[in-house]
Image 1 (spheres, helix red, strand yellow):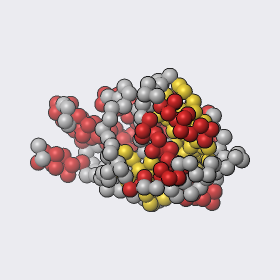
Image 2 (cartoon, rainbow, N blue to C red):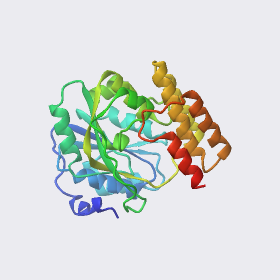
Image 3 (spheres, helix red, strand yellow):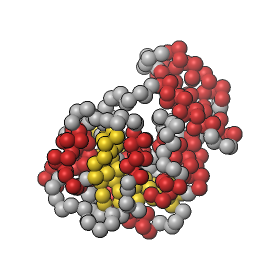
Image 4 (cartoon, rainbow, N blue to C red):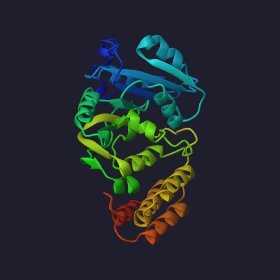
Length: 308
Protein backbone atom coordinates (compact mmCIF):
# COMPACT_ATOMS: atom_id res chain seq x y z
CA UNK A 1 0.00 0.00 0.00
CA UNK A 2 1.43 3.39 -1.00
CA UNK A 3 2.63 5.78 1.75
CA UNK A 4 0.41 8.33 0.02
CA UNK A 5 -2.63 6.44 1.24
CA UNK A 6 -1.63 6.52 4.90
CA UNK A 7 -4.33 8.34 6.81
CA UNK A 8 -6.76 8.49 3.91
CA UNK A 9 -9.10 5.89 5.38
CA UNK A 10 -9.66 7.88 8.52
CA UNK A 11 -10.52 10.97 6.51
CA UNK A 12 -12.99 9.34 4.13
CA UNK A 13 -15.99 10.46 6.09
CA UNK A 14 -14.62 13.86 7.03
CA UNK A 15 -16.31 17.15 6.31
CA UNK A 16 -18.25 17.15 3.03
CA UNK A 17 -17.33 19.66 0.32
CA UNK A 18 -18.88 23.11 0.63
CA UNK A 19 -22.52 23.23 -0.35
CA UNK A 20 -22.09 26.48 -2.29
CA UNK A 21 -21.33 26.40 -6.00
CA UNK A 22 -18.04 24.48 -6.27
CA UNK A 23 -14.90 26.04 -7.68
CA UNK A 24 -13.58 22.66 -8.84
CA UNK A 25 -15.37 19.76 -10.46
CA UNK A 26 -13.48 16.51 -10.01
CA UNK A 27 -14.32 14.09 -12.85
CA UNK A 28 -13.45 10.42 -12.35
CA UNK A 29 -14.26 7.88 -15.10
CA UNK A 30 -14.15 4.26 -13.97
CA UNK A 31 -14.65 0.76 -15.31
CA UNK A 32 -14.48 -2.42 -13.22
CA UNK A 33 -12.02 -1.02 -10.67
CA UNK A 34 -14.14 -0.49 -7.58
CA UNK A 35 -11.21 -0.98 -5.18
CA UNK A 36 -8.88 1.40 -6.98
CA UNK A 37 -11.55 4.02 -7.62
CA UNK A 38 -12.30 3.93 -3.89
CA UNK A 39 -8.65 4.76 -3.21
CA UNK A 40 -8.83 7.54 -5.79
CA UNK A 41 -11.88 8.98 -4.06
CA UNK A 42 -10.18 8.75 -0.68
CA UNK A 43 -7.37 10.91 -2.03
CA UNK A 44 -9.92 13.48 -3.26
CA UNK A 45 -11.79 13.73 0.04
CA UNK A 46 -8.45 14.08 1.84
CA UNK A 47 -7.71 17.34 -0.02
CA UNK A 48 -6.81 20.38 2.04
CA UNK A 49 -8.95 22.39 -0.42
CA UNK A 50 -12.60 21.42 -0.03
CA UNK A 51 -14.64 23.59 -2.38
CA UNK A 52 -15.24 20.89 -4.96
CA UNK A 53 -17.82 18.50 -6.29
CA UNK A 54 -17.08 14.93 -7.32
CA UNK A 55 -18.53 13.48 -10.50
CA UNK A 56 -17.97 9.75 -11.02
CA UNK A 57 -18.88 8.23 -14.38
CA UNK A 58 -19.21 4.45 -14.11
CA UNK A 59 -18.66 3.50 -17.73
CA UNK A 60 -20.18 0.05 -18.04
CA UNK A 61 -18.70 -1.66 -14.96
CA UNK A 62 -19.86 -5.22 -14.27
CA UNK A 63 -18.21 -5.64 -10.87
CA UNK A 64 -20.78 -3.75 -8.82
CA UNK A 65 -18.88 -0.45 -8.89
CA UNK A 66 -21.99 1.75 -8.95
CA UNK A 67 -23.63 -0.09 -6.06
CA UNK A 68 -20.39 -0.01 -4.06
CA UNK A 69 -19.91 3.73 -4.58
CA UNK A 70 -23.53 4.54 -3.87
CA UNK A 71 -23.38 2.61 -0.61
CA UNK A 72 -20.10 4.14 0.58
CA UNK A 73 -20.43 7.72 -0.64
CA UNK A 74 -24.12 8.45 -1.17
CA UNK A 75 -24.70 12.14 -1.86
CA UNK A 76 -21.04 13.02 -1.44
CA UNK A 77 -20.59 12.17 -5.11
CA UNK A 78 -22.65 12.71 -8.25
CA UNK A 79 -22.72 9.25 -9.78
CA UNK A 80 -23.58 8.69 -13.43
CA UNK A 81 -23.75 5.46 -15.40
CA UNK A 82 -22.84 5.09 -19.05
CA UNK A 83 -22.80 1.88 -21.00
CA UNK A 84 -19.22 0.96 -21.78
CA UNK A 85 -18.06 3.73 -24.14
CA UNK A 86 -14.44 4.68 -23.39
CA UNK A 87 -12.47 6.90 -21.02
CA UNK A 88 -12.50 10.18 -23.04
CA UNK A 89 -16.22 9.85 -23.76
CA UNK A 90 -16.83 9.33 -20.05
CA UNK A 91 -14.67 12.37 -19.23
CA UNK A 92 -16.57 14.56 -21.70
CA UNK A 93 -19.87 13.27 -20.32
CA UNK A 94 -18.83 14.01 -16.75
CA UNK A 95 -17.60 17.48 -17.65
CA UNK A 96 -20.92 18.28 -19.36
CA UNK A 97 -22.52 18.02 -15.91
CA UNK A 98 -19.80 19.97 -14.11
CA UNK A 99 -20.62 23.13 -12.18
CA UNK A 100 -17.07 24.17 -11.31
CA UNK A 101 -14.83 26.86 -12.76
CA UNK A 102 -11.99 24.33 -13.02
CA UNK A 103 -11.95 20.66 -13.98
CA UNK A 104 -9.70 18.17 -12.27
CA UNK A 105 -9.65 14.82 -14.05
CA UNK A 106 -8.56 11.81 -12.03
CA UNK A 107 -8.14 8.38 -13.57
CA UNK A 108 -9.66 5.66 -11.42
CA UNK A 109 -6.28 4.01 -10.76
CA UNK A 110 -4.42 7.22 -9.85
CA UNK A 111 -4.19 9.27 -6.65
CA UNK A 112 -3.79 12.88 -5.55
CA UNK A 113 -1.57 14.27 -2.83
CA UNK A 114 -3.56 16.23 -0.22
CA UNK A 115 -2.41 19.70 -1.35
CA UNK A 116 -2.93 19.08 -5.07
CA UNK A 117 -6.09 21.13 -5.48
CA UNK A 118 -5.08 23.81 -2.98
CA UNK A 119 -1.86 24.59 -4.83
CA UNK A 120 -3.29 24.38 -8.34
CA UNK A 121 -6.40 26.44 -7.60
CA UNK A 122 -4.25 29.12 -5.97
CA UNK A 123 -1.95 29.10 -9.00
CA UNK A 124 -4.74 29.51 -11.54
CA UNK A 125 -6.54 32.14 -9.47
CA UNK A 126 -3.37 34.24 -9.45
CA UNK A 127 -2.38 33.54 -13.09
CA UNK A 128 -3.23 35.81 -16.03
CA UNK A 129 -6.15 34.91 -18.30
CA UNK A 130 -3.94 33.35 -20.99
CA UNK A 131 -2.92 30.52 -18.64
CA UNK A 132 -5.46 27.79 -19.40
CA UNK A 133 -4.15 24.89 -17.37
CA UNK A 134 -1.65 24.02 -14.67
CA UNK A 135 0.05 20.66 -14.32
CA UNK A 136 2.47 19.22 -11.78
CA UNK A 137 4.89 16.40 -11.12
CA UNK A 138 3.96 12.84 -10.28
CA UNK A 139 5.37 9.72 -8.74
CA UNK A 140 4.46 6.12 -9.52
CA UNK A 141 3.23 3.01 -7.73
CA UNK A 142 2.67 -0.54 -8.89
CA UNK A 143 -0.66 -2.35 -8.76
CA UNK A 144 -0.14 -3.13 -5.06
CA UNK A 145 0.65 0.46 -4.10
CA UNK A 146 4.43 0.04 -3.82
CA UNK A 147 6.75 2.80 -5.12
CA UNK A 148 7.65 2.26 -8.77
CA UNK A 149 10.07 4.30 -10.90
CA UNK A 150 11.47 7.60 -9.78
CA UNK A 151 9.28 10.74 -9.50
CA UNK A 152 8.78 12.78 -12.65
CA UNK A 153 9.33 16.49 -12.01
CA UNK A 154 8.44 18.84 -14.89
CA UNK A 155 9.88 22.12 -16.03
CA UNK A 156 7.83 25.27 -15.46
CA UNK A 157 5.92 25.29 -18.73
CA UNK A 158 4.65 23.04 -21.52
CA UNK A 159 5.36 24.80 -24.81
CA UNK A 160 3.75 24.14 -28.17
CA UNK A 161 6.70 22.34 -29.80
CA UNK A 162 7.08 19.99 -26.85
CA UNK A 163 3.34 19.27 -26.81
CA UNK A 164 3.57 18.32 -30.49
CA UNK A 165 6.62 16.09 -30.25
CA UNK A 166 6.76 14.59 -26.75
CA UNK A 167 4.40 16.13 -24.19
CA UNK A 168 6.19 16.40 -20.86
CA UNK A 169 3.13 16.56 -18.69
CA UNK A 170 3.67 14.18 -15.75
CA UNK A 171 0.51 12.43 -14.69
CA UNK A 172 -1.22 13.68 -17.86
CA UNK A 173 -4.78 14.72 -17.06
CA UNK A 174 -4.66 13.24 -13.53
CA UNK A 175 -1.94 15.73 -12.61
CA UNK A 176 -3.56 18.78 -14.15
CA UNK A 177 -6.25 21.35 -13.48
CA UNK A 178 -7.90 23.03 -16.48
CA UNK A 179 -10.31 25.91 -16.87
CA UNK A 180 -13.72 24.54 -17.79
CA UNK A 181 -14.35 27.44 -20.18
CA UNK A 182 -11.24 26.48 -22.17
CA UNK A 183 -12.09 22.78 -22.14
CA UNK A 184 -15.54 23.66 -23.50
CA UNK A 185 -14.02 26.01 -26.08
CA UNK A 186 -12.21 23.06 -27.65
CA UNK A 187 -15.24 20.77 -27.26
CA UNK A 188 -13.37 18.59 -24.80
CA UNK A 189 -11.49 15.51 -25.92
CA UNK A 190 -11.71 14.56 -29.60
CA UNK A 191 -13.80 11.39 -29.61
CA UNK A 192 -12.68 10.44 -33.12
CA UNK A 193 -9.43 9.49 -31.38
CA UNK A 194 -9.61 6.41 -29.22
CA UNK A 195 -6.12 6.97 -27.82
CA UNK A 196 -3.86 9.98 -27.03
CA UNK A 197 -6.74 12.42 -26.72
CA UNK A 198 -4.83 14.17 -23.94
CA UNK A 199 -1.93 14.96 -26.25
CA UNK A 200 -4.29 16.22 -28.95
CA UNK A 201 -5.89 18.63 -26.47
CA UNK A 202 -2.53 19.79 -25.06
CA UNK A 203 -1.40 20.69 -28.60
CA UNK A 204 -4.54 22.75 -29.15
CA UNK A 205 -4.17 24.44 -25.77
CA UNK A 206 -0.52 25.39 -26.20
CA UNK A 207 -1.15 26.84 -29.66
CA UNK A 208 -3.50 29.47 -28.18
CA UNK A 209 -2.88 29.53 -24.42
CA UNK A 210 -0.13 28.85 -21.91
CA UNK A 211 0.12 25.66 -19.85
CA UNK A 212 2.16 26.10 -16.68
CA UNK A 213 3.59 23.34 -14.49
CA UNK A 214 4.24 23.29 -10.75
CA UNK A 215 7.61 21.52 -10.33
CA UNK A 216 6.64 19.28 -7.43
CA UNK A 217 4.89 15.94 -7.04
CA UNK A 218 1.14 16.38 -6.54
CA UNK A 219 -0.24 13.15 -8.00
CA UNK A 220 0.52 9.44 -8.17
CA UNK A 221 0.17 7.33 -11.31
CA UNK A 222 -0.43 3.61 -10.93
CA UNK A 223 1.68 1.58 -13.36
CA UNK A 224 0.16 -1.87 -13.55
CA UNK A 225 0.37 -3.08 -17.14
CA UNK A 226 -3.35 -3.76 -17.23
CA UNK A 227 -4.90 -3.84 -20.66
CA UNK A 228 -7.18 -0.98 -21.57
CA UNK A 229 -10.35 -1.65 -23.45
CA UNK A 230 -9.69 -2.00 -27.17
CA UNK A 231 -6.19 -0.52 -26.99
CA UNK A 232 -3.57 -2.07 -29.29
CA UNK A 233 -0.20 -0.85 -30.54
CA UNK A 234 -1.66 -0.47 -34.03
CA UNK A 235 -4.39 1.74 -32.61
CA UNK A 236 -1.80 3.84 -30.76
CA UNK A 237 0.11 4.20 -34.04
CA UNK A 238 -2.95 5.32 -35.98
CA UNK A 239 -4.05 7.85 -33.36
CA UNK A 240 -0.60 9.34 -32.92
CA UNK A 241 -0.07 9.73 -36.66
CA UNK A 242 -3.52 11.26 -37.06
CA UNK A 243 -2.71 13.86 -34.41
CA UNK A 244 0.64 14.55 -36.07
CA UNK A 245 -1.04 15.10 -39.43
CA UNK A 246 -2.92 18.04 -37.88
CA UNK A 247 0.29 19.91 -37.01
CA UNK A 248 0.55 22.65 -39.66
CA UNK A 249 4.28 23.37 -39.30
CA UNK A 250 6.14 20.93 -41.57
CA UNK A 251 9.32 20.91 -39.50
CA UNK A 252 7.56 20.22 -36.22
CA UNK A 253 5.35 17.61 -37.93
CA UNK A 254 8.46 15.74 -39.17
CA UNK A 255 9.94 15.70 -35.69
CA UNK A 256 6.64 14.53 -34.23
CA UNK A 257 6.43 11.70 -36.77
CA UNK A 258 10.05 10.71 -36.13
CA UNK A 259 9.44 10.52 -32.39
CA UNK A 260 6.18 8.61 -32.90
CA UNK A 261 7.96 5.93 -34.94
CA UNK A 262 10.69 5.73 -32.31
CA UNK A 263 8.00 5.29 -29.66
CA UNK A 264 6.53 2.47 -31.78
CA UNK A 265 10.00 0.90 -32.04
CA UNK A 266 9.98 0.67 -28.24
CA UNK A 267 6.38 -0.61 -28.04
CA UNK A 268 6.90 -3.35 -30.65
CA UNK A 269 10.30 -4.44 -29.28
CA UNK A 270 8.97 -7.30 -27.19
CA UNK A 271 6.21 -8.56 -29.44
CA UNK A 272 7.53 -8.08 -32.98
CA UNK A 273 11.19 -7.36 -33.71
CA UNK A 274 10.42 -7.01 -37.41
CA UNK A 275 7.88 -4.23 -36.83
CA UNK A 276 10.09 -2.70 -34.16
CA UNK A 277 13.08 -2.38 -36.49
CA UNK A 278 10.88 -1.10 -39.31
CA UNK A 279 9.74 1.82 -37.14
CA UNK A 280 13.29 2.45 -35.94
CA UNK A 281 14.56 2.83 -39.50
CA UNK A 282 11.58 4.99 -40.41
CA UNK A 283 12.20 7.26 -37.43
CA UNK A 284 15.75 8.08 -38.56
CA UNK A 285 14.77 8.36 -42.23
CA UNK A 286 12.12 10.95 -41.37
CA UNK A 287 14.41 12.99 -39.12
CA UNK A 288 18.06 11.84 -38.75
CA UNK A 289 19.14 14.79 -36.57
CA UNK A 290 18.83 14.83 -32.76
CA UNK A 291 15.27 15.43 -31.59
CA UNK A 292 14.42 18.04 -28.93
CA UNK A 293 13.43 15.39 -26.36
CA UNK A 294 14.96 14.13 -23.14
CA UNK A 295 16.00 10.75 -24.52
CA UNK A 296 18.71 10.29 -27.14
CA UNK A 297 17.48 7.79 -29.72
CA UNK A 298 20.91 6.37 -30.50
CA UNK A 299 21.72 5.73 -26.82
CA UNK A 300 18.35 4.04 -26.27
CA UNK A 301 18.89 1.77 -29.28
CA UNK A 302 22.40 0.78 -28.18
CA UNK A 303 21.15 -0.03 -24.69
CA UNK A 304 18.33 -2.18 -26.04
CA UNK A 305 20.63 -4.19 -28.28
CA UNK A 306 23.24 -4.65 -25.54
CA UNK A 307 20.56 -5.95 -23.18
CA UNK A 308 19.16 -8.30 -25.80
